[in-house]
Length: 417
Image (cartoon, rainbow, N blue to C red):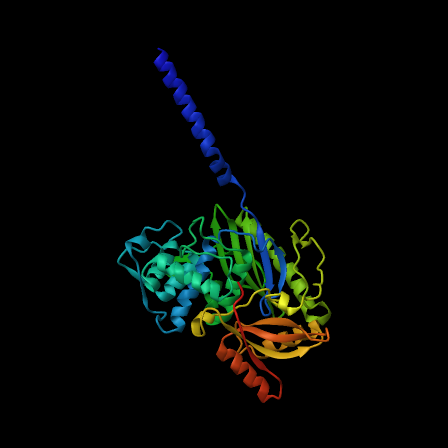
């Protein structure tokens, strides 16, 4: 009898210990995902609105933007064509939904794979693409991280091609904005796939669940995502009155809420972006948005004076450089076209924005940068640059400017981060 009681007490103790042991995990699993967002000017990269843009978050299916980036790279190099087959392994077939449902041993075309990733967000297709390009998904993740560093995503780590949850797969909204902008300018001919509302697969018509594209005037891309750990996410691009904005939001409670908040971000972003046209407001600081009122929570503030160059690694617009140094000049080098040194920060910024637009045909993917230089007499000059270029782009830009009688100097720069 005594032994039975001891067994019962021991069993109850073990049950209680198990409950206590599991409690933190259960609480953690039910925690509300953190919310973060960022909106940038699509041409200059100027950050307009942000809330916790460097907060570590899980990318969910926004991961597939990088998977598509590398697939587009394969098309550009001629390794693949739109009609090339993407073969499915047993591993690809076994991926959980969302999926296209292709059987092992079968294949689809690269074009179908692009639609399946951009519209359907198919996990099985993501793995099939990874294995096609790098033999294994693990090797593909190495390529993903190399590309992430090349375009300035210094706070991102990829471990899979789909975005299925893994605690080691992390990023930030600022990094995702960089990726979205790089996709637009480095692979502009393929960006149209991010605007597709449906595609055909056999007898089925597969439709997009990106309702923001259908609801917001001027929206033209790019991708939705969801896992429980990160909530409802959205990367979006929109154009109004000739100006493009790119925005990222993560942590939405529902898809409807996420879309509504993205609309508020875009509306406020376009309003703030208009100030960039006025040199008096060049370089406005990013602000947070009050979603209850749809207005900035804090009025925009002008940035203070730049510190001397020797005390700063980068004083640029945008806060990061878009480049692909790994494609032709090594992982740690990018180039800039220096346009001149001016006495005013605002005039330097205005010059760089103007020339980036004028030279868009040779500087795709470049960004506006203003670098201060302190002279011996204490005077500060502001050097206007188009940064984040390949060596060939910088040389062509300067050639065009010199032929029109303007100054230009090719500058070699390290990739920040």
